[in-house]
Length: 169
Image (cartoon, rainbow, N blue to C red; front, side, top):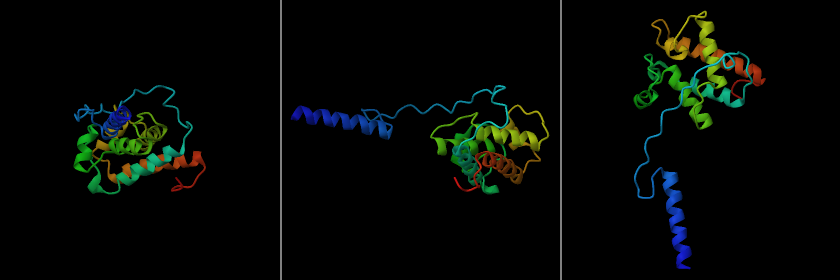
């Protein structure tokens, strides 16, 4: 009986440690590595890829995160931790946060994010950028209305492929 209770206590300690992010000795785990940024490929650059309701939810969440000028960071450096701490987000960081909120992890080449990249290309008439989301966000002539417009275009494209109405997510 005592042995069973001891095993139960040890099990609970390990489970609580895992849930709370602490090891058994109460020490913090090392910080999580930053989300992986994966390179593109010809296949990922094809428009019209299959979408899911999660893609729509990501775009809706990103729109919500960039609701007004007070929360928009127009100087993106693709380092989102400091943006979040400051309460401001760039287009890239809003999409990253939305992706994590919806999926539980970040997918750099997720269809929702690719659709925003395509909308940026269309809005800038194929202008060549090193990083489409960052560089569009940082253009001196880009305004929040432009950021919200590319999100809306991407959302409309995803919605039409899902054949659902906006807000039905």
